[in-house]
Amino acid sequence: MSTESQAAHVHRDDFGAKLGMWLFLVTEINLFGGLFVAYSYMRHKYPADFHHGGAELNATLGVTNTIVLLTSSLTVVLAIMAIQEGRRAASRAYLAATIGLGLTFLVIKTFEWSAKFHHGLYPSAPHLATLPHGEQIFFGLYFTMTGLHGLHVLIGISVLTVMARMIGSGKISQDKNVTLENGGLYWHLVDVIWIFLLPLFYLAA
Image 1 (cartoon, rainbow, N blue to C red):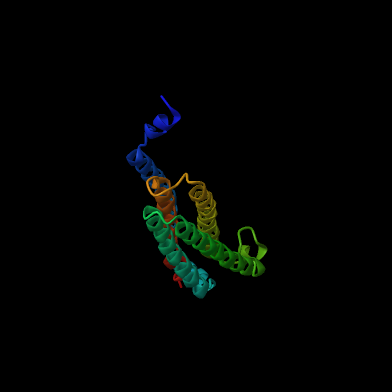
Image 2: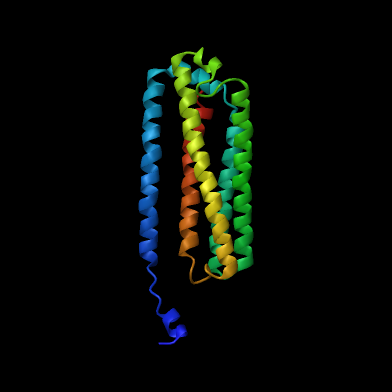
């Protein structure tokens, strides 16, 4: 059999690939779901302390980052639509925009975390140890959950960067785009998780 014939008969299981991605996303949802349950329990136990802790966060930055991520969800959808229409350059451009928005999110988050470190509101900080126990738990959960989310954003940026290169090399194309669709699903999960984090922390006051 010639090389061309072998290439034509390469087995593709797009359904299996999508199913595998959804199963992976379920594990991610379970991970954050457990943290959401822990947050809910502790907030019920220390309502006043969580209220005061939320007042220490910058809601403006939280809402700004929400807008940034929602916009990035739009650009990743546009990237998928573009590749499905055979517009490779446009797809890469939309992915570049998504990556840029993801980096913007991380930069804003870095400034926000820096402010909390400056004010001694981070785990094991001497100042935080002087605050009520509920506030200590609040900021412990804040750094744990937003830090874990930030790690997922960084992973998503790395994945989308690889996919942009795959589009350039032709490994992702108009008729082979399930990989990009799965990457988009992961990015949407990152956005959805943040939408839950916003009211739990920034609007907790």
